[in-house]
Image 1 (spheres, rainbow, N blue to C red):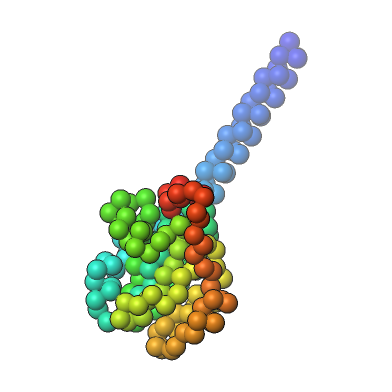
Image 2 (image 1 turned 60 degrees about the vertical axis):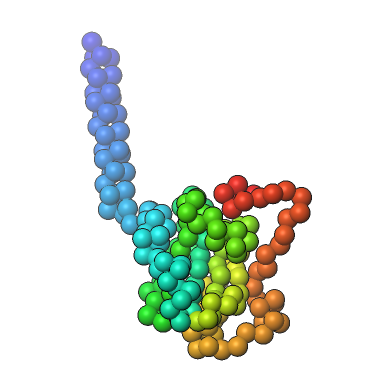
Length: 181
């Protein structure tokens, strides 16, 4: 009889402990949701906050064009940095974000030879492609390029080739940005 009472008490304590643990996890997720889901939220909002590419290339402002996908881990990692750059420079530079999973942007994906994401293209105010970044980039490199672009500073071929990643053509396979490799 005493053994049944002991088991009953242990079961009640175990259930109470399990309940408290689950409740704590749920409360932490609710309280810290911005911390856990900020990058995903930022990526989802990029498309909504984007300048239309047709307008961007005709309004005599430099343009920052990023090709991304919501499922891309590197895109998620870079999202807070890109968002901070957007907040800082959006008065002087167009920020265009095109989700490679949206069929509507296929003509831009082909036009700019997107073969990896994230891909950032920087254009001068006349719409000339100045530089391309593919994959994870340090914020300082992008910031320096935007500063030069914003000031109308010149880019030399040496500078672009040594600082920025280059698009490498894959002749073995036909790869699309959606294939992820």
